[in-house]
Image (cartoon, rainbow, N blue to C red):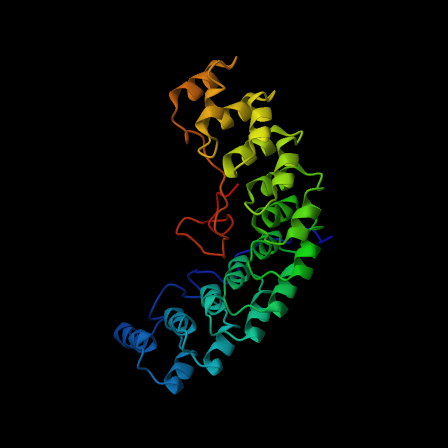
Length: 306
């Protein structure tokens, strides 16, 4: 089991004293503009980029940190930069070394750590550090990774956080992990499995009999079920489950029509309308990789997920 979630802070972010978000930092503005243009110019030689990595303006340093062709001598000090957005740019840079990514995945700032999760340069050693992190969100991003090693996936099966296990359940391709999570006692984890299109027909049949209605609803809206499972769900005791059957695009019309005389008028009306898709389908979303939106604020990357 993992240790409890660590404090998730924004460290070294834009503020007046650091000058982040400004170009001149007390220097001549026109000169700073020229340095920024040089940092962004694809023709700028590597030696000049190494010098610009020590520029007083964080915008210039960020431009260097964002370049996929930036030399290692430039990225190394930028991975230790006092400005968090510079470090975050290095964390996203596919040319960042494994050593820099291991350092940045332990960064004090959450956005820097989360950015590492989406970097294609991550290898098993970086993911090993992620699996041991106190940061629940970082482990959740790892759980969604397509490159997740089987031994790390097996470790996350027993993660202390139900959210991490749910995200693993939703995205895993590993049949052994799916089988192990079928026995999870937390409903939200089984709900994640219900959304996973890689479950077997037998596993879907078991989820169709799950004691928690939310699991059965997620299943009906996310994957195709056998005729026998659908017939059972037509008579489900939960109105929400029957409504899901009546509105799911994955349910054949003849099954939906069986609910035309449902004792709940709303379910019956939905079945008679013959227009599936009125309920929100909890399909599997593409894994989030630490992208920050303009209004992300204090939430998780991409936010508003579950």
